[in-house]
Image (cartoon, rainbow, N blue to C red; front, side, top):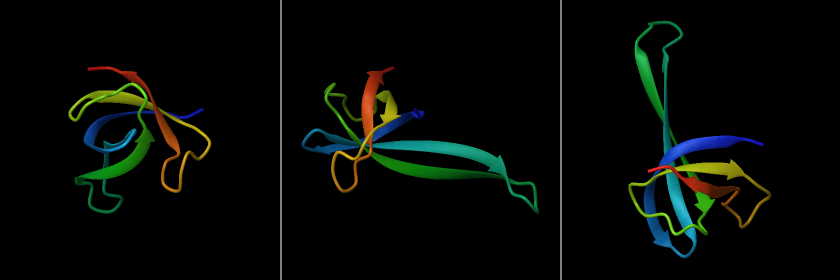
Length: 75
C-alpha cells in the first residue's frame, strides 16, 4: 500500500479533506530546484482539522474523486 504525508489545506466538505504535498527535485536540464505540489482528496473519519499534518493511505475508490483515507494525525 502507498502512504503519503501531507498537510490539510481544506476541510469544508463532509468527511473529506484536501491534503497537499510538496516534492522538490532539480530541473533535468538547468539544475534549479523545482517544487511540485500535489493535491489529494481523502476520506476523513478522524476529524482532522485544517493545518494538521496527516498520513494518508491509498484505498479503493470511496467516491468519484476520493481514493485516499486519513490514517493518522501526526501534528
